[in-house]
Length: 163
Image 1: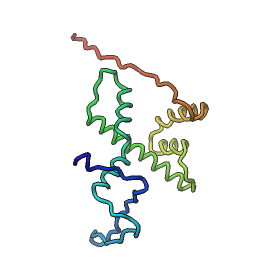
Image 2: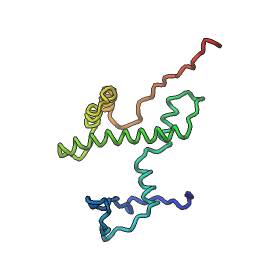
Image 3: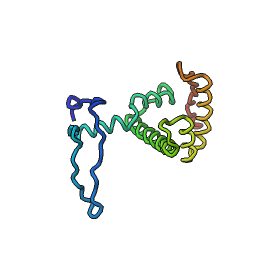
Image 4: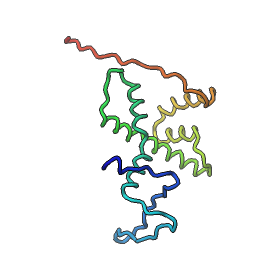
């Protein structure tokens, strides 16, 4: 596919992708009429829409990965893509659980406490404890302004005894 053929879908042109109902007896699709004001969506647009909305931007993932390794280290493209997919799935997983809690409590906004609850519920208690401290510091300092400075932990090269 040529990058010239790809053009982003404007937010006002996006329509929800609603699967057609299925016949439970044989799995065949039952035809359904599109909404009256909806323009047909091409397969290419569906693929582009899903890709950009499902994953975090690769540049952001790459920057975070690079900050965790020595400056001379290189990270393969497939490693970046793998981490991109994993962290995006992880975020969706946690957010989905937090959203269920909000829905059950008839709230529309997911808050920090909901994320902590979801992480604990899903077995990520050790991460939830660290995030609880971070959330408290964030609330103490206010959410405006630049983030606190990052503490770098250099990775020492391994020295083989044979050398």
